Amino acid sequence: MGAEWVLDEMKTLKLADERLTRRAKHMLASMSEQPAKSIPEASENWAATKGAYRFLENERVDESQIRAAHYQATQGRASGQQRILAIQDTTDLDYTGKQVAEKLGRLSNQYTRGLRMHSVLAASVDGVPLGLIDQFTWSRDQDAQGKAKDRRKKDTQDKESQRWLDAVQAAEKFVPPETELVHMADREGDIYDLLVVERQARSQLLIRMSYNRRVEHETRYLWDAIRQAPLAGEIRVEVTSQANREARLARLSVRFQTLTVRPPHKQAGSGVQMQFILAEEHDAPLGADPIVWLLATTLPVDSLAEALVCIEYYRLRWLIERYHYVLKSGCRIEDLYLQTPERLRRALALYTIVAWRVLWLTYEARQSPDQPCTVILQTHEWQALYCTIHKTPVPPATPPTLSQAVVWIARLGGFLARKGDGFPGPKTIWQGLRRLDDIADTWLLLHP
Image (cartoon, rainbow, N blue to C red):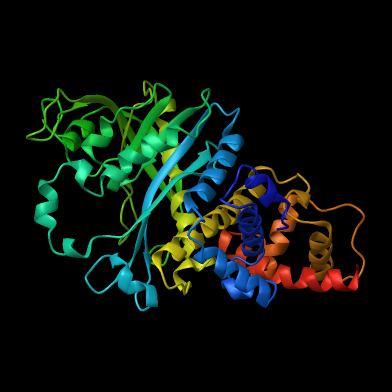
């Protein structure tokens, strides 16, 4: 993918020493060119490998400064947009069996060790990932194992749930003043304190509900109340295939209503008024789980059209899941062999930017297919790519379009590009990038 983008992405980065800043940029460029390779494999030689490990060991390297430089670059990409989506989610990074595991906290049970990561991904309303605007990693306290009852008695600020509220405040710092921010979360974000969190005037919420909360309505509870709302209309939604389901075109009924959610027992307050949208599938195929989305939002919902806008926004929430998928499967960060949590976190600060770049490439090529591929590839890279795919020694005089180049990169990664295959996903793209790097290096030797 070339190294020019790194200079622009990290232009505000200033570590404790200029040599450290240069090393960070060099490592980021090497990792982005070969996202699936280990640190020694991605380094050019033994000297570069030693330099990379010394960088990760250096206590003067503050990983928060690396993340902040990327956040500011994200802010630049968000500039001028009327509205962007701030999509939150949490994932586990499993290092069980690695040397560093004994220094990390538990994950889902007492036998697994690793880090937890909470990310906020900014995306345009048409689905292009603009970059991270907040990310936090932590290790659980080993002494907290088996104390779920005690955690339920704690205030939100003393629990992991606080990360959802903190992310709202952090994300607002990196968004241009003229841009409206829509904070989005899946059912894990159905936290009353998040529904009433203090936000700036330009910030909105869009959260998928999980609990049957008490509301001010004759039925008393949320699910009963929203199902009594009149039918507003129907929509059809494409459901993608997964390991346990086939692709289908689902027909959803849509209802919406304004309701006041009452505070939980033992919590003061008069409640919070929000708009609720229920999109529900009634004729799902036999054996398939029907789609049921109950969304709460502070955006105005006075018509079916406004309700459909919120549903379309929610459908983009899976971008954060794709991001974490690229981070773990594409960049293989769970395969890192680093001996301390501090080194691991410094490496993660770099790899999280690489993962965004691969994801951005996937969706930017869909939204702006006709721009030249030179936005992502250097001259020798697109020439090597073209000649490899077309089995010719002579490249064209002008570079191909971005969409053409991305499809060819994916073909190197196993994408068949058959009629009806659609656009390639991030997995075949990162696999193709790995091959392209070797091909381009060979091309450069033969065509200096």
